[in-house]
Image (tube, rainbow, N blue to C red; front, side, top):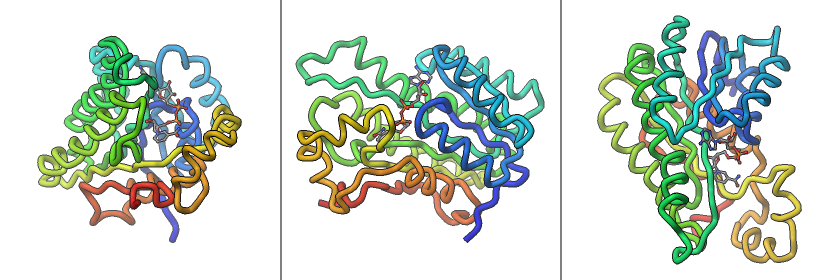
Length: 253
Ligand SMILES: NC(=O)c1ccc[n+]([C@@H]2O[C@H](COP(=O)([O-])OP(=O)(O)OC[C@H]3O[C@@H](n4cnc5c(N)ncnc54)[C@H](O)[C@@H]3O)[C@@H](O)[C@H]2O)c1
């Protein structure tokens, strides 16, 4: 099955992150016309690096917004519209997890996690939705988590935000199906990357985490990107309101 994004303009948030970079690579390889990449101010240089790396292969445009600040999100969406670009696919990938026990959770940490993961993603989707996705009969994929489906320690804000995303997917499906806009989620288990590998592969975390995944392996960024690419492609044209878990069976036990 060949997935093709020729002629499509794809917007990816959190694009300088581990999964974000994989998505940029995969959408570029699948022929996307334009990659619109958003990340936080601290990743401005990384985005410019990506832009340079893909020069001549596809059109890449980069934007900066702190997802805790709705005005910054609206400014980016207006900038994209002023540049005459309509978005066909939105991937809500920006996310943050600050691990704290419930009794150590304070308002600042709670707001940071929930504002980035849930509120920022909603307002980006709302703005892009009414400016582009509805006219394009486009689609949105939110990146939730296995921890949007099941609970875990040290993650009250994270689990709440990721479960909230699943509610948001259902609510937007109810409102936007009439326009032909599809809205889905992908919920990964722990994703291996060069920064977390030594932690995830330590004896303690293999016991705590790996042993709870029936397939007994962590996800790779490609595993998650494959699911996102499928849901955001025409091959999934009958699928909306869905949460595709990419979890090696974690949430089935
Ligand atoms: N890594 C995992 O094990 C795992 C598991 C399940 C779900 N997820 C989810 O997958 C997505 C991608 O995760 P990743 O592993 O690539 O993490 P990552 O930290 O490498 O990437 C996340 C990106 O979000 C951006 N971001 C964070 N705060 C922001 C803010 N205030 N404004 C704008 N952007 C901001 C970061 O700058 C970063 O580029 C996230 O939504 C995450 O919650 C990750």
